[in-house]
Image (cartoon, rainbow, N blue to C red):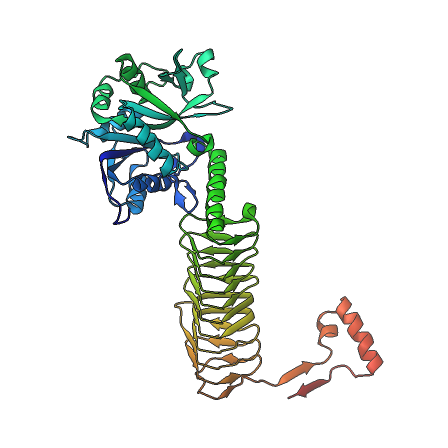
Length: 491
């Protein structure tokens, strides 16, 4: 909630996150399964906070500590409430309401596994509830296949009469296509009184929150229902199929929002953007691009095709192609890829390049510096306008500890160099092709590690007789009339 928002002192939000979610078939609690860069319950918390309530309470039970930690990470100000051994959503709300002593406003009940409800829809639900002075107002939806959901039963006048859970429904009730979305607004006082009257006389042996609706109607209090305009926005996640469907729908919503804000997305179907990512106008995302977690992309950058960025920062007019990067910073007008693996701690300066089949880790690559291809740069600092030749390796690990390689400004290295850390290459220095650099190189020096080349004639025929290589070598030697056994040394 921003500092400019005013708290709604007459609104408390209760989020139900106590269930196990057995249909997920997972050791991870259902509400902690993620879509769009956040756990399911994280999205629900975001929605609740957007309403600026007086308090938010989250009811936990299964894997209590894991869920509570995730909730506090997402929203430190919330109150975590423990459900006891009495099962059911009615009991879950009751233990939360017990924490609201003296509160006489409205209690909005949300489910931690319903991540796609927009704040605007909940604001409308709340407005209808207050305008009608209702004791309760619930959110419903009309679906083609209501299997698994509680049915909304209306009377002859079309007024809400009660909610029947799937396992308790008769054949006629089960055929009803209006379902309960599990989202309610209750006036606090009548809610408290009916919660105390709940029993567990049902197929599940649980205290249903839905029974509160029937008790309120029986007492002739006003109970309303608002039908959601799009049923998919209010459906819960109960298994992995529904999880992927919710992820797809959320992603489509996020992509569309960025498109309307000036981002070019060539193929929305293959582009995934987390809710936590930030994009500037005039960014271009090519097919197969994933912008994940807290990644930020500045104006004019082009990302893709086939790029995954996790917690990265991409500068203005940068280009990233066919690459995977995590916890990296790419400066303005830098160029990454194709086929680059960028590991945490990489910083690429303005106008720099990390090229084809390059891996970097914990490396600072200065302004205008290039690592064009086939190289590994780890635990290293490269100065400005450095050019590493193909096949460069910073050998940073000695089997006991990691060591750093430091390369000064304007250093140009030969192909297939190995820098055995710790080692420093001075400003303006050069290295020859194939050099293995074990000692510091002074500024402006040329480092060479040259050994004479020794050719052992006849080695293949002697040591690999009967092979194809031996046969062709023998024919070639015979044609050249070169005697066997001669060793020639070229230096």
